[in-house]
Length: 359
Ligand SMILES: Cc1cc2nc3c(=O)[nH]c(=O)nc-3n(C[C@H](O)[C@H](O)[C@H](O)COP(=O)(O)O)c2cc1C
Image (cartoon, rainbow, N blue to C red; front, top):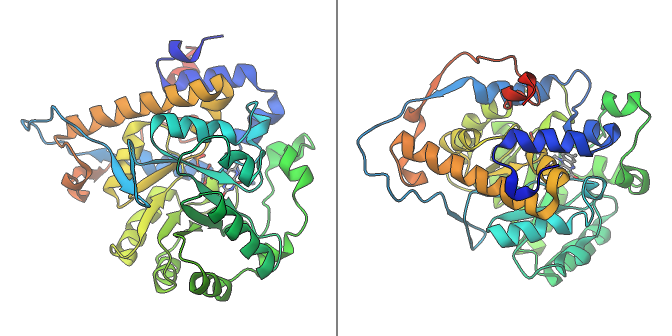
């Protein structure tokens, strides 16, 4: 088994994670809902865009950093919330938080992940974000926001695309449930009832930056802006929830247009490489979330693996920006992209073609 320092390409994380994880955890990590159509479309929507590069510009000092929620990030990256991280890596949710602090990006901690809110907050003194699934009434919700504020979280996220826990057939086939699913599934009716009135109440009461994760249409993005949401998180939950949704990158342009600079846009779905991240930024994202790639790196080599993954991602992003002929994000616009047919059938691992050749 390679150490983190020996890993040189993204696909090596996938290979190492598969070797290391029991098949149940592997399938829980990479799988999607029902036919996995949404999951595949996430990759397809990214693959269906080609770059239009410009040459002969001085690109010696590429800077892929951004500022978000009052903090400078080395890359526009949030390690997305992953429930049951403890099933992939010893130390659970504290591991990506520590890696984010060392590298200089955000980790968004899932409420269905151990150790819980305070346990992760105490693990390192560095800005982090908390993501909640609603499992109780207004008092229950407010207690979580109060606890997150007290523990120093810089933004608070509600994931809103999981009113019903989808049927992920890789898990069902093995009668498998992740550890958090076994222990934290009660009270799901509260998430079903949670609605825009609740968002209004929470916005009126709290100043902490609010994020809504799971926005998939311009219509809802407009509502986010009208409700004073700070960041619209465009996501289909990595294809793990509603099947037959659109590919994430196909959704981004209409949301960017609807938001029109009035809120930040976070995007996730299928990001496995630097070029994917760059495409999302061109389409209007201010920052991207990384789900499975984070899980693969954590499973492969823990905190060091996450740092190595972020370093490789940074190298890929810097090279992509430089070869596009720009040094900063604000120099890019949609003219740097062009529609193109994908060259590989899309699937969860299709960003790693060498895996099929046995590397
Ligand atoms: C194993 C796993 C667990 C997840 N758990 C959560 C969660 O607890 N809360 C949440 O908002 N999203 C959760 N997600 C969705 C991710 O935050 C993210 O939206 C998605 O993985 C992005 O797609 P990608 O995996 O293609 O990068 C989970 C995703 C995976 C793969």
